[in-house]
Each structure stands twice: as C-alpha cells, then as structure tokens.
Length: 395
Ligand code: PMP
Ligand code: GLU
Image (cartoon, helix red, strand yellow):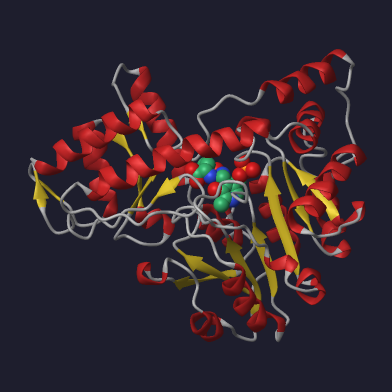
C-alpha cells in the first residue's frame, strides 16, 4: 500500500523514540538511566489531580467547546495578564491537546508551499517536521555557542526573504537552555516589526528559569508585535502535566478562528477532565512550581559540573528549561572500544550500549557537535549516569 508523499517528508519524533527505546530496554531487564525524556519526573501536584477527580465525579465528561471551555480560557487570560502583562479576549485563545498540537494546528493554518519559516538552531526536534508537513520550507539559522546559542540580529536579517512567513522563537530554549533577555528580544522585535513576518513564540519553559533570568515574551514588546505574534504555551512542563495533553495558543482572532475550524475536524475539544485540571493548575496554588524549579536548579548544577569534569566534554550553564547541551567535539573523531565517534549519533548509540545511559544526539536538534541530556530525573540517577558516562569515555 502506498502512503501519502506527505508522510514520507517527516521522521518520528527522536526525543519520544529514545524515551520509548529506553523503556523497552528496561522492560528487557537492562538497567537504563534515561536522560532522554524531556518531561518533569515529578508527579502532578495534588490540588490539580483533585480537580480532575472532582470533574469526573461531577460528570464533566462530555464534549466541550472545540477550542476549550470559557472557564479555562479565562484562567489563561488571567495568566497572561498576571505573568506577561498581555491582554487577550476569549476569541484570541485556542486550547489544544498539548503545545505540540497547538504548533501543529498553527502551522497547518498558516503555512503552505512557497513559504519559508525561520527556525534558529539548535531547535526543538519537532519544529522542522511540523513546518515541512505543510509544504513550507524550514530555514534553519545556526546560532553559536559563543553567543549563548542565541539568534543574532544580523543572522536573522540575512535569513529574511520575500517568502518568509514566520520566525519560531523558543525561550527558554529546548535543547540549549538559552533564555533571551528583554533587550535581546527587543532587538529581534525591531527587525521583525519592519516586515510582514509573523512570530511563533514557544513559551512552554517560561516558568523554568534559573539565577537571575527573567522571562520576557516578544508579544509584550509593543501592540504591533503582539498583533503579529502567536504565543504558544501549556501546562506540561511547569505543572508536571505532560500526560494530560493541554496546550494553548493566543494571537490574532482570524488565526485562532482558523485553528478552531481545523481542530473541529480533527480532535474536537481537548479532554474535558484535563481542562478542569488545567484551570486549577493556572488559578491554584503555585507553590509546587517553585519547588520543582528549585529541584531542577540543584540538579542542573550537579549535571553541569559533572559533565565539565569529563575529559572531551564541555558544558555551558543553561539559564532555563531542564536540559544540558554539552559540546562533544573533544570526543568526535576518536575510536572508543572499537567504535569510531564520527557524530553525535555514534556517541549516543555507544553510551546506550556501553554505559546503559540514554541521551539524544545533537544532530536531532540541528547540531552534530553536541548531545542533549535532560536533568528532569532524580539526583541519584544523575550522579550514577555521570559516573557511567565518565567510565565509558575514559576507556
Ligand atoms: N515546545 C517545546 C520547546 C517542547 O520542548 C515541548 C515538549 N514536548 C513542546 C513544545 C510540546 O509540549 P506539550 O505538547 O507536552 O505541551
Ligand atoms: N519536549 C520533550 C522533549 O523534547 C518531550 C518529547 C517531545 O514531545 O518531543 O524531549
């Protein structure tokens, strides 16, 4: 049977594939330490779970409006006012089945063949495929480690063409942890403002920031920027709710209406119960968020220090999210235990095989000189995983 040409233009999500592979190896009895999964290891906070249980008991188990309940949209509107000083109306919000679904819907309603979409690299694994599925061309713009992995204004300027439809910005960034300052965002905004280019601002790691980093969304710069920005966010990362599948987009009414139309023909509404839980996540007690971020911060320090102590690796201190993206150039070209390390995939395969440690090759994020490790796992796993990596690379 012949599948559509469309489906052959993309690959499966590498981050999810590695997580599945680690799980499968564990099921076979292998003692795998997983640094692959990009999801908090914490349980969803109790108040959120209780809201979901209440929703079930009260029979809130039917279809809801396609783009989310008014109650959840109002909680999202309040969140934008509180955290970002942004004002939206209900018809400027669409709730979907995870931020990935929001991004997918957005790409489907905005992009088509002939369009170009600028994606700074290293990038989250799914952007390029989500764009490619629409027929548009992902234009990958590299960033440098020396620039903190941040998109430089001249690079953005050079990448713009008559065909550019949008720029995808992700701060804090998966996989680098780079978080743009207000000034850096304003400089990029100044360039975009002079064009017809839209901005997709993926703010999913907004709450996961360290040291003195302050979150700033490009939609906040001025009303002109707000009018050309679609903010994507969700509850997965901040509230340890990856399995609940609630994400949302906020932006111009006509784009949101188109996303609603598309969603009405694919998933219909996101799960009613998860919507109730998300209202509690956004409106309820935020103590758990701070506790999780404090735990991530401790792990971040151990991870960065541990990786930098391994010969051949060097690792920047990430400012946000829960990933480290160490430079593996010192390993590349070497042969370890008969295996030549020509690229990040070779190293990731070797670490899984020889050290029982799962990491994601940097190549999947658009840079083969790196690998990604998630530190959203216990300190015990981090310490043991670092020890294993060190031993595997020293042999
Ligand atoms: N954007 C980024 C940068 C991510 O890392 C993720 C994590 N999968 C998502 C979007 C999507 O998150 P979710 O679909 O779980 O809301
Ligand atoms: N965002 C996470 C990651 O990058 C979850 C997996 C995914 O959706 O790709 O690992």
